[in-house]
Each structure stands twice: as C-alpha cells, then as structure tokens.
Image 1 (cartoon, one colour):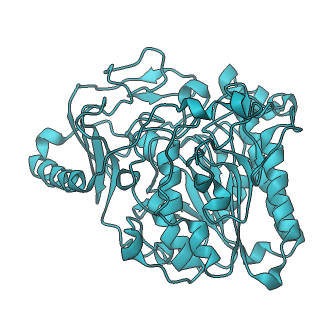
Image 2: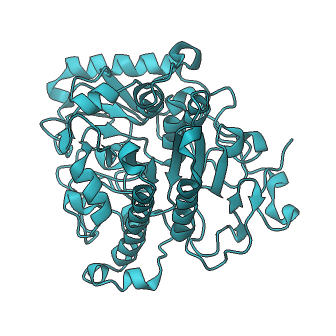
Length: 465
C-alpha cells in the first residue's frame, strides 16, 4: 500500500499532469482507477481512517495533525490493518510517515501490529536532515537512526521496502507493507539530478519544478520496489494499492485542477483522492471505477476482501465497507453515503460539515480552511480553481453557509444549487445531524513540555509512561 503525501488530483501524468510519472502511470493504466474515492482534508485524519476503518470523528482525531509530541494518537482501543492481518499469518511492515501518535511507545507502529518500522513519527520533516524542529525523527524499529544525515528520505524508504521484500520467506506466509512516502509534502526539497531533469526543467514555475523532482524520485522508488517484487517472483501474487492522503497543497507546488480548492478544504480538490488498485490477477483491468468509496473502506477491504479473513465489524464499530467486489467486479458499492467532514459548532470552522449522498454533496459552514473567508490572500487554502501557474479562477462566488452540488453533473463545484433543491438540503442536513449525534469530543491537546527532544539527546522520543 503506497501512500503519497499531499498528492493532488492533477499531479500524475496518467491524469494529464505536466509532471511525468511513468511507473505510477503504468500501474494506474493497467489497474482500476478510483474516480469517486474520498479521503480526509489533511493527513492524520486520513491515516487514522485508513488504519482503523473508522471516521476520524468517531475517534477524536478529525480536528488536527498529530505532531511534535502532543499527548494523543490513534486510540489504543482501535484495531489496525496490521493487527488484523497478523491474525491471518501475515508479516507486517510500516515504512515512512506514521503521524498517528508518538507520546507513548504504545502508540508507535511496532506496538500497533507492525513487525518492523523504518520511518518517522511526526507529520513532516527535512528530507535530508531527517529533523522536525531541528531534532532528529528517524527510527529503525524503536532505535534512533542518526547516521543518515544527507541521504534523501525517498531513497531511504525505498531501500527499506526493498529489504523487506528481499528478506521475505514466502513459506512463512504473506506480507503487508504500508509504504507511506514523505513525498510530496513540504518542505520543497529534491536532489538536484531530479530537478535538473528536462522533464522538470520544462515547467516554468519554480515551486512546481521542485515538486516535480520530489514526485519523480517517488515514482522511481515505486519502480524500484516493483522491480524487486518481480525479481523475487512475487509481483504476480501482490496487490498494489495507491492513494494520496489529501488533496494537493498549491502553495507548495501541488495542483488539483480542474477540481475546486485543495488540501484542508472540503471542496473536491481537498478530499477527492487520487487512488488506484493493481493486480495482474484481477478479473477486470484497465477501467475507471465510479462507485463511491472512502479511506475507511481500506481496512475491511484489505482484511476481508483481499486476505479473506474474518473481521468483527460490530466490535470495532467500523464505518468502512469491504468494497473488494465493487472495485474488482465494477458492481454497486454497499456505501450509500459518506461523511466528508464534521466540525462541532464551537470549532473555528463555524460548524463546517460536508457529506455525499448519491450524487449530491452538501457543505454547511465555510468550506475554506480559514475562518478569514472568503479568501486567503497568500493562496495557501483557496476557495477557487487553481491553474498550474498558481493563478486562481474564482468564478461565480456567492458567500454562503449552505452549499449543494450535484457532483455527477458538476464535478468541479461551480454551481451552488441549494436554493433550487431545499428538499435535498433538508435530507442531507438530517444525515449530518445524525452524525453530530455520534460525534465524540475531538482531541487537540497542546504540546507537552515533557516531550522536548532536548531531554532525549536531541531525538523525538515517546516521553510518557
């Protein structure tokens, strides 16, 4: 399972991007492209949804990013994909970005069902120095890695996955690898040989050129990993899942055109996820799946659909569905609706919520990621449609707290039709109110001084018992 950080709707060349991604294109074009697949609007919430199969609003994790030693994480009473697969004899491996809690060891990957971990705990870091706020955040299992200063993280994470594959003994069972690349999250950093590549140099926008180099390096890494699978005669027995964690962040080179908005917004550019599934043994290949899917669906789909294991849906209170038949046979999804966002009324987003029911999408509150609407001047979170050159097409804009779009007819959300369909607005608001009744307090504790890495030899380390 490849998770690419902050990959926008218009950032891969199989979708027409100006950035060439030949490996990603190969598997997307041979596989099943998920065209109505949704994620959360930023990283920790999506990763919790993937890992536990529940909406982050049901775990207290929708409000913020879990970083800098803040004392919370994916609740310990939640299962994970890794926990469930281990019951079926899988070896489990986590590489790259975790971002699901680090204040206690119990919240870190090797305590959440993963046999091995090579990566970092925080939400981002320097690609070469492997530091967050000037302190080291790189681990091999639980041991700090302090001797890779200067090595690009994409290379390190690719090599770590390759080593897992090289050491795998098929006679001892199958494996699950969660490969969460740091790319293409800020900071904008890439080895010069990638940014100097003519494929990137032809891009006239400086941030986009560096972004191009970052994505090209990740694409090459995925190519090296799949070649290693081929060398071990494992590729034909492997299912590849590819997903972003949220929409692209345009201020740092990402792009979601022609979708509206971007990372942190509930417009489609922030929450419609680039994703696909590949396996040489799928009954139907090379097609666009248009069924409604969500990040919460991965746990039951992987555990029940791919691994064929039993899963106690009621025990774990899953919001996701096993959509393996939907994906592989192009049949109707069991999912009739999905909750895109839910902020309590006391939150700074003034009760912003969003959900899909069939072709309809309702947004209540302010769909921008800032309460300083209608627009942020620095373009970090625009409410319009952002071209590759960074210019914003604001289009028809009427400030509103009720937005209704027919995504099938208006996938780019240019026409708010709430006034024309008050019955649909009422129906979807009732569903939001239902979810409000199941909403638990969202966690967002302040940084804990006990986690100061200066107390742990300059390394980010679980600090609480």
